[in-house]
Picture 1 (cartoon, rainbow, N blue to C red):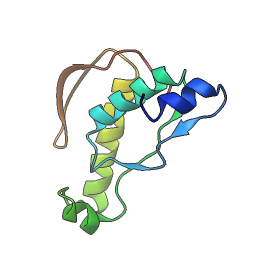
Picture 2 (picture 1 turned 60 degrees about the vertical axis):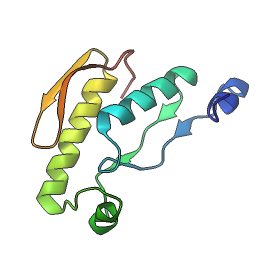
Picture 3 (picture 1 turned 90 degrees about the horizontal axis):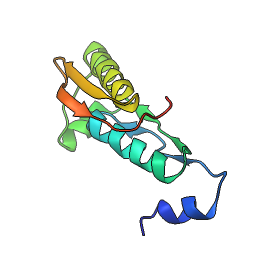
Picture 4 (picture 1 turned 120 degrees about the vertical axis):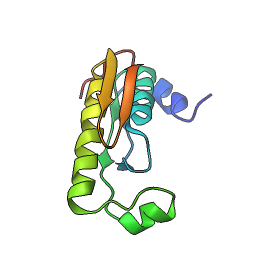
Length: 112
């Protein structure tokens, strides 16, 4: 049994949240898929918190790119757009300097 399944099966009002998931360390399409799957398991009680990455040096130390200022904002905006598309259901197609996603089908829509 998954760690989230047990609490979700024994309660009807408790929400589940990610706190702040750093978009520079988690691929946005994958994060959206995980959130949508957890949302199904918890009957719509998932709250997804995301951020652009406040500590570029720490992100670089973990293998990410050290984005700052306008570059970090552009990356975050593109990531959020990708996640909105994925969480809306249907096919996701995006080609930006930051992401290339060609026809990913996210599955069931999640309210954003």
